[in-house]
Image 1 (tube, rainbow, N blue to C red):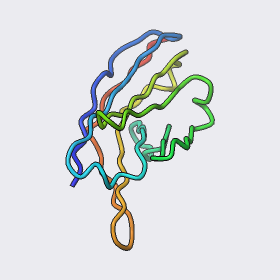
Image 2: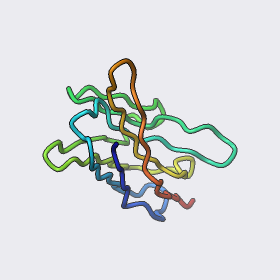
Image 3: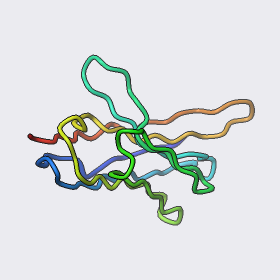
Image 4: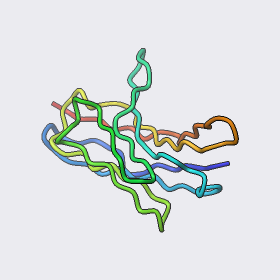
Length: 119
C-alpha cells in the first residue's frame, strides 16, 4: 500500500507559477513511476508529467517547456513546478504512484489539489 498526499494548489493569475508537492508513504520502495495527472469536469484524467525511478520523464505536449517534474527519493517526494500558467491548465491535479507487483502494476492516487488559473 502507498499513501499519497498532495499540497500546494491554489489560485494564480495567467503567466504565474505554482509548485505542487506530493508526499508518499508506505511501500515506497516498490514505486516505479511517480507522476501528475489532471482532470476537469466531464473529461478523463490525463497524464501531465511522469518520472521513472531512473529519471526518465514524460510530459504532456501542451505543458512541455512550462512544467518540470522532479523527485526526491530520500524524502519520498514528487514535485511539479508549473510556470507560465494558462487558464486551460485549470484542473484538479492528482499525484500518482505506480507500484510493481508480481505480475502487473498497481496505481495509487492522492486526493487531488485544485489549481485555478485566472485570465
